[in-house]
Amino acid sequence: MDMANRNVKNPIIVPADVPPSVDGAVVECVLNAGAFKFNGRTGLLMRVAERMEQVEGELSTLVADENAETGVKVVSFKLDDPKLRYLDPDTSSK
Image (cartoon, rainbow, N blue to C red):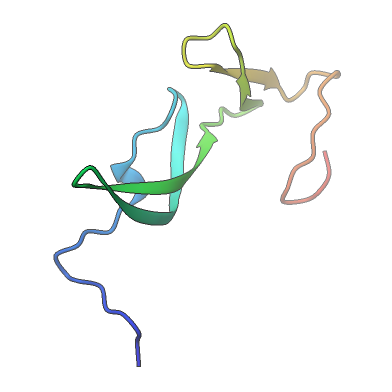
């Protein structure tokens, strides 16, 4: 027996409902939404997992940049750059 049942009138938040935090990012999933009440209003706190859109032959990532308007910027590296060392999570090798 379930301890709780979802009300069919309550929507589920999906990645398409959440805009990326920066241009070039893709929202992969929304996690652990928690509801709270404050000043008579209900709000949600949730974790959002994002990744950078990848271009063939390049590696892009988000880094902190205190000089950027948003506090972050996207940096890209060519995969054939001899100074770049990275591990492919699928193979644990370069």
